[in-house]
Length: 136
Image 1 (tube, rainbow, N blue to C red):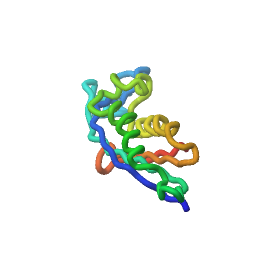
Image 2: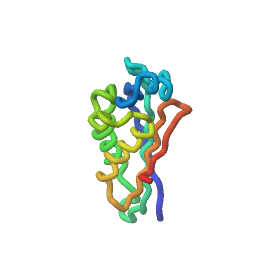
Image 3: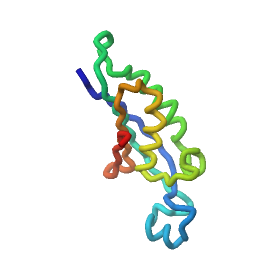
Image 4: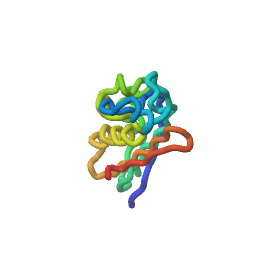
């Protein structure tokens, strides 16, 4: 039997959407107010979903305490109250769009899980705007 378990978390972070290799005019035209040179912030909501076989001995797909700790240590501590562009190494040369943040989170967490488990990241940048990424 397979099941999906999910854990919610959140972090607050600032970012600026822009490309260093584009002119100010092009950045403004493409990214608009998200290109603010003084940055802007979001209260990100994160849902980490893990799908796999239910262990017949424990009844778990994954121990939720382990998942909780992993998200806290690897994501919340690294991203919360940070300027993503300036303080998170993954975004030094990667535009911190919601899409790219979801992929980075996936790439951080996936190697730390049993390889037989499927991972899906859902990241809400606002209550109405969100991204889902599952490694494809």
